Image (cartoon, rainbow, N blue to C red; front, side, top):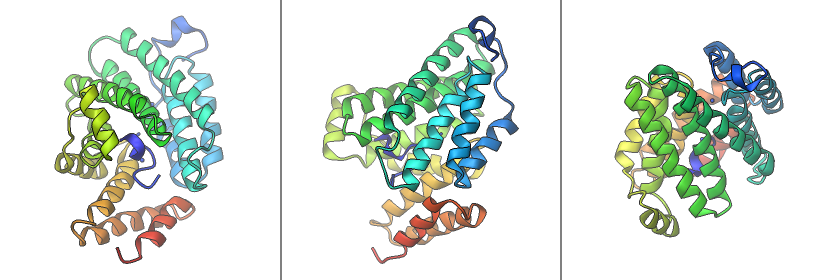
Length: 269
C-alpha cells in the first residue's frame, strides 16, 4: 500500500550536536535548510541530495530529518533509474536510524509543537519503510509500518491541527488501502487496517498539493499519480494529472522522473 510514498504509484510524503544527551534537546534543522536539500532531490540532483542529508544527519546526530530525507533521495534516485532495488539495504538502514531517532525525540519532547514535529518525522520514516516493504512483497511488514505511520501522524495532528504536511501520509494510507490489490486488502483486514477511503485520500492529497510546506511538491507528484490511476474510471482526470506534472517538469526540468511520467501518460488509456 505504501508504494506511493515518496515516488508515488509509478514507483511518492515525505524528517544535534554530536553526543546523545544534548542531541534530544536540540532544535530541528531550520526550514530553509531542509527545503534546500529537498530542492536538490526534485531538481534531479540525487547524489548531491544524498550527500547533503548524510552530512545533516552527521551534524545533528539525534535528529531524524537527515537519515529520513537521505533515504528519500535514494528512493527518488532509484525511481529515476527504474530500479526498485536500488540501494535497498542502505535505505533500510537509514530508515531504521530515522525511526529510532524520531522515537527518542517523541519521548524527549514536551507535548505540543515539538512533539508533533517529531511524530511527523516518525510517520514519514515509517511511511517510506512501508513503501519499501510493499515493493518487495513483504505485505505484513508494510501493513504494520503503515498502521504505525497512521498512528504517528494522527497523534501529530491531534497536537497540531494545522499540520497540513501530516496529511500526506494519511492521504496515501486512505487512497492506497482503497485501491489495494486483493492480497494487500486481505492482509489489511487481518491486521486491522480498515478498507481505506479513496475520496478522502484524494481530497487530502489535493490539500497537501496546494498548501503543504515541506510536502507540497511530493504531494503534487503523488496526487498526479493517483489522478492518473483514477482516470481509468474518469478519463478527464488524465489531463489534470498531466497538467500537475507538467508544472513540476517546468519547475524541475532536470528531473527524469517527471519527464518519463509525461511521456508515458501521453498515450491513450
